Length: 321
Image (cartoon, rainbow, N blue to C red; front, side, top):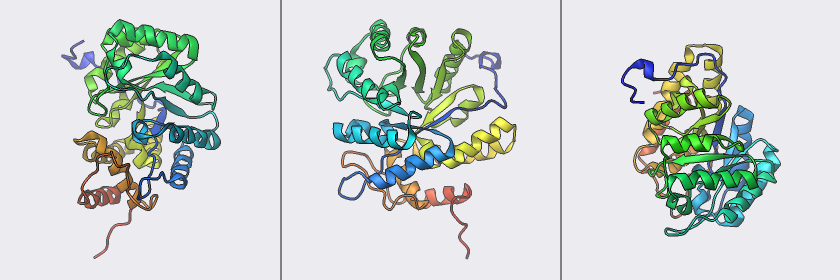
């Protein structure tokens, strides 16, 4: 499908109830320790807004965490969210490693026994498989591990990310235990193709948009699992409600949130996590904007722009002369 005309694009879905999930930032203290109190507060804030928290994702620095830290993140989610959360089933392998189904199943089981829904996180081993092997690997994971989401993640986020061919997406969608997918190519065309395929083949399959540069993909029938929503879960929930009610205020709020996304998800994309810490600090929700040592950071000059955006969104007071 080349989308040569407007008729090639899936139809708009006005007044649809959007299913929103938010990849929750894992905050850090100066010196490199996790700020567990701030994390618990932001997790509770996300739940209170009505969004499904997603833990141990890229936004939560999963690839930089020690196993014990990933487990504590899951324990916190279990205690605060019950069975209502999503989490990345991450395997810390290396370039050249083969796919390790046992390690992946163990990561899935760790999430499932706490009540969460696993997302099979990209890894070097999965990246090494050919397209047909990817489908068979996930089929075996479903057979032995139960319900899961699969994850297409562009290389702009992690070097071992991968966007599958559309035929592979279709094969993955046909796995009974696979109930949805997170798609993070940052390309509308790729996501529209998947929506059209989903609508024709399996309408109950949940497609979570990970396009932080096009958060209006919800208008065409995507749901979302975004890193951007961790900046403002309250505002994303408000936006979603406006769409469900058919309120034109959706567009103005969406535009302002997209301005925030365009600024904070610029290259290098992984530095958006530091942008999130800067923004949450401006909102008074974090006491600092610390990040893990290996994580890229934004310049301090970004804070003035973030302050302007936050003021426009109504979460900071307007400065008076």
